[in-house]
Length: 341
Image (cartoon, rainbow, N blue to C red; front, side, top):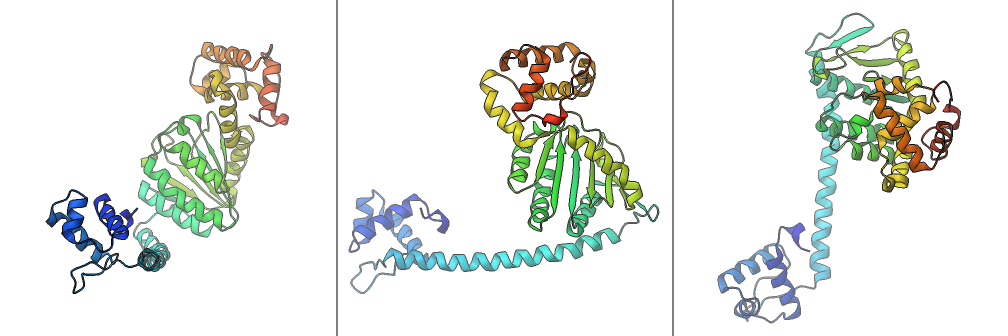
């Protein structure tokens, strides 16, 4: 109970004893709690320093203030200190923008009026920070199957939450592989809870970040984020990326519905990749195409679909698509039965 004052359980035992028996001497405290006298005195001195006890009076007895006043006063003091600290942190956050600006001025990133080259991850993160401060309407992000460090996800969450608090729309598409990375699922769950719109796509083609549809970040090498990125600053250059994002978004599964579906059928043993295969088939893709997108064999895809049909109690792939739609895995308008399906 007193950990917030850096006091341990022995301090608390001494304090509770003195609350119940305020006329106890140090010797009596030591005897009652099976402590040696020196240890009991150290615990009492710590409680005096924390202002939970008053120093002994002329009669040698400890003075025990009423806990409502003693602890209540300490809480009020700490709340005031925390408020001051929070204000200081907010001022530091505001000054960080100027520091980031100064950091970027030390690098010549200009390729042309419309394009910048950011050759390192640090420069990319700095430019993303600037973009997050200037965005007005929407941020669109695609996160493919490449591994993203947990530290990078953790660093991006405060920026995303700040953007959402300003009323900016945040739309993010991620892959099942990324969701399986440590901490990723919790990251996107928090983003969705805060109002961000998150969807899952089996094979996003490449990482991208689009800001207000006017500027876009794309990697130099999709397989190696450490090589940096290009910043496109002309709407004519970002327009194809905006179109691509919308196509990916329409084919992706809402993150919330994947959570709901997992809770609904986990006991039956269907996992996220099985559901994703069903979604792709429902969108009209052939078994071989699904296998290529999900980096598995065609035989594996067919086994997954057979498993899904058995678990969901359907007799055909068409019925499987209808059932997948009913469960919210994809919108009804997205169902397309063709060829093998």
